[in-house]
Amino acid sequence: MKLSIFWRLVLTSLLIIIVMAGVNLYALFQLRELTVLSTEMASYHYPAVESAKRLVGSLYVQLNSEKKYLATRDQTFLRNFHEEVEEFRQTLRQLEAKETSSQSLSMLDEAGQLFEDRLLMFHNELQQTGEAAGETPAGYEQRRDLQIERASSLIQQYIDLHEERVSQGVIESRANTARAESATEQLVLIALVFGLALAGIASYSILRPLRQLQNHIKQIGQGRFGTPLQITAPTELRDLVDTVNWMGKKLQELDDMKAEFLAHVSHELRTPMASIQEGTHLLLDEIPGPLQAEQRTTLRIMADSSRRLINLISTILDLSKMEAGMMEYRIVPTDLKRIADISINKMRLLADSKHVQLLVEDPGGRMWVKADAPRIEQVLDNLLSNALKFSPEGGIVKVQMTPDSQAGILEVAVTDAGPGIAAEDLPHIFERFYQGRFKAKHASAGSGLGLALVKRVVEAHGGRIWIESEVGKGTTVRFILRLTKPARMERP
Image (cartoon, rainbow, N blue to C red):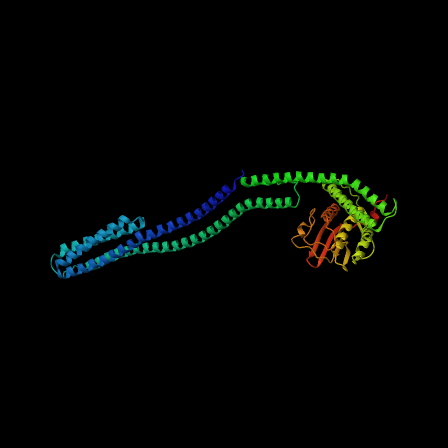
């Protein structure tokens, strides 16, 4: 299912919120457990310990009141004794009511029974001795102290049991706190990574088709209209992609119409232009009759202009054939050194008129490459013509051939010392009809088709062409062709 950008962002945000909510719920659960443990210690264990300590204190307060009463028979001490007894019983009943442990209840029951036995012993003693002060039967105090000591010991065990539970609770609380802290840190880290991953996936799913669309628009801007863009994109971008594809299709149709028109017009112009050129040459050869100096100058201008126009028409026709895939190449082992010499010889007259020196640098010997000789000669003609056009008077144009036997290629470089090409012009320099901002002095404007043709020819040979240039320091055009051996040359 293709989601829109809105729903992708909404679902991603919801997933991140759910993950963070899960982390917070876990932290709250751990906090609640710690709260329950703290509440249990504060509301159960600590009060039980305090009440048990009061029981122990009450036992000894009773003993003190009893001793005073037995010594003086003062009713005030007896009343104090009975008040302490009643307080002891009430406190003991409260402890038993709140106690949940069978072990603790057993201790309290046994301590209560010992307490009641001790009271019974005291009342029996009162009945035997009556109101006479200072008369205490032998062995009574020993039995009484033993009962009190046993009851006090049981209550103390009860206190120790609760204090041990408190200590265990504190240890458990610390361990739970440490575990909760560690788990929460890990969960927060996982949630953070998960959230970033979700955000990254959502962003990538939106930005990726945008980048693909941007690259496709750049290709359209560079004149490649034919291939429609097929991508998976959100619904909002899908409409935009369809619009761009429709635009590319229309531009391709217009480009095809333009190419067809140019090819048709060029073909129709070639025949009459050839006739004009032949007629001009006949006049220059004075076949119809002698010429005056002014007439000869005019005819030479006409001949030169017709030649340039015929070259332009031929270039347009060749480009049209290449773009239509109708250009035929006869790629065979070819001596590139010989082709370079032919091109340089053709350009020698133009170089001498501008006082420009033409040089060929090669490692020596023949350079055999897989090539269609006339087309590679056309490449070198265009590159040398451009280099001479932009070279200053007295400059040097060099043709370098550097073989790389290991890679199986030959690199050819044509270098001039002209004004160079601006960096912003370099990406467009091989486009049809494109001309850089720097113009050659005392030279006619070019058509902007030569380098476009050169690029297509080199790439048709499986090679690659590029330009290195710096403003004010000249330009070097480099292309590579595949090396071969003369033994593989086809025989006619």
